[in-house]
Image 1 (cartoon, rainbow, N blue to C red):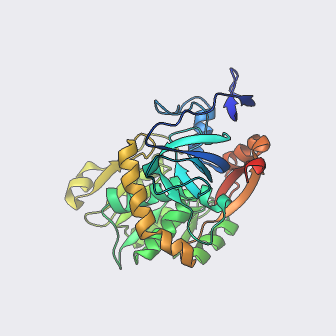
Image 2: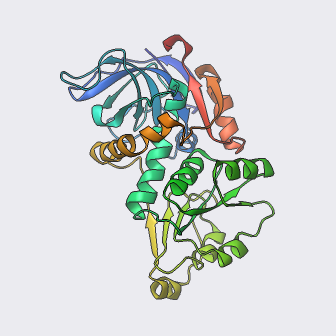
Length: 322
């Protein structure tokens, strides 16, 4: 098969690689589409390698057609599926544990399905499992609301009945996230996030930005608030008033999805399928695809994410596999 590997200069190269050897508990998928995530940009830069036992090239989520499945599996050859991966999605074939493979929700395309597993598992893991969920009347704050994870988190929080505050990078993005359900969208280039959070104290925050501003915002959490940190795009240092932490009984939680075991990921995906997949089929939840590129134009796809030019997901397609 072919895969989009990284050469010795860390440039993308479409190369012949060995076909994956499917284990007894794995599903072999002929990839039709693979979504691009910011973790892929980090991997290309050499600072976020695939976990052991996964291919060394990029790709955390993909969708396609089942080529082989375990005996007595719920999947069979020809089924349309999507999968959460530890790596290896930028290839014609990929093998994944059956628990990390999901049927494509009814009424969604393979391109849309490829953009579901990573961001929705991340949003669900952190809002529901790490933070303990949201209830009507809670205030939820999420950074980078126009990103794939941001759009998923906004929709999930609204589904739970919360009021949503988010940050965005342009007026166009602000308009879009409001249409999706965000109650307040703060433009990071001119808005005053501190002032907004002073007035609306978040019960739960999902933060991929961090940096110096994080500490100022953290002190405005509601009593018992939970701040979930999943990345530090603005830097890894900030100043937190520890007295505020114990007086308000606040929780600061660090979280990643990629480093979790296949068993942990399978449990998360099972909950996604049972609780959220029906909402995708009905159209209550939507998957926003900003752009799709053939796998040969992977550099253009990465550049779009690098410039924060996307509203939603960017997907790579393997036309010959449709």
